[in-house]
Image 1: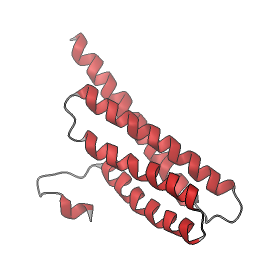
Image 2 (image 1 turned 180 degrees about the horizontal axis):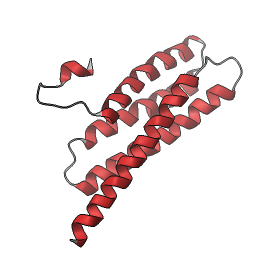
Image 3 (image 1 turned 90 degrees about the vertical axis):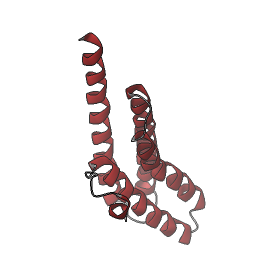
Length: 129
């Protein structure tokens, strides 16, 4: 689906693609939680899990490097919150398996962290030259 949105000139963006796919999987998982009447956790997980990609998508049109970093940091915070909710699901009885989602969120957190640190270093190097 995300492929349809891209023009022929646009290159694939790993983190945008990862977070979009993750959001789709969060939707499916939270629908499973709702079927089990786990509404509170489902709502929290849905909001934080889909917010990662939404903020990241917004960062692609940032007004400056500082704005870009700020939006990525919001995505990173949402990713950490999502990890927390997934860990609660993993350690609670009668919750669907979320191991795959936990692996994905760890990858997303690592990539976001790397992008933030690289962008900060580029910003520092640009201002010192």
